[in-house]
Length: 108
Image (cartoon, rainbow, N blue to C red):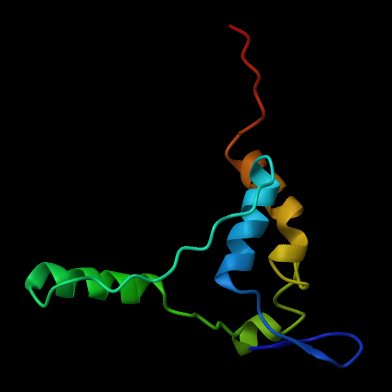
């Protein structure tokens, strides 16, 4: 479901490529993540059919909408209302904090 911006314009949800790029930019030295072109699996055998099925499962576009309970401000307090990409640093920080992860340098 598109998110309505304060100015009244509607923004589209981020694409999978934008999400992956945002995660890469936050957790490592930023680089441009290459896009992989879809390749049709060869063969009409069982292995080709299984590969096509896996490929389809991994390329689904998921559009998620919050339930009515999540929209009730008395029941749910949003911490990242602007979306995943705009809050990547905060989310990565929480992820690392909860898993007790931290940067480490090793000198050999």
